[in-house]
Image (tube, rainbow, N blue to C red):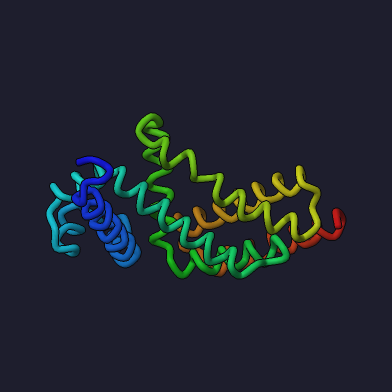
Length: 194
């Protein structure tokens, strides 16, 4: 197929529709019950066609994760938070209500440790998009440019660490206290830099 071949557009549109379906499916069932066969059945296609459009199971999962991340950061950006504490709290609340998204993220992170060369599309964007979001918020809050990036990275690391703890322990009550304390610490730091 060439760039001007009408089949290219059809394949691209079909890939986009399959990706949307995969995002919805994984959000509903999570990674622990995920198989290509189940996804194919849910989408009315075959495992072979999923491989044709996405290359492999891991590539499909990485594309789903990237799409989820893009949607979430776009939604949070539209809300224009003025403090890192508010942005971290909103991100926490979003993912606590959608833990399968974070299960997928941590699954792919573990796979990337096992086979780094196969997961560069995942690792190249796993930090940068979130770092940019939190850095923008830190700059609005009044952090200097260099410090805003460090604060954004800290916000991301703190949030992800607490979510991983929640996934492992299920101890939501304890971790709600931890996220509140983390947000308070971010607020206290902002006061000293502002």
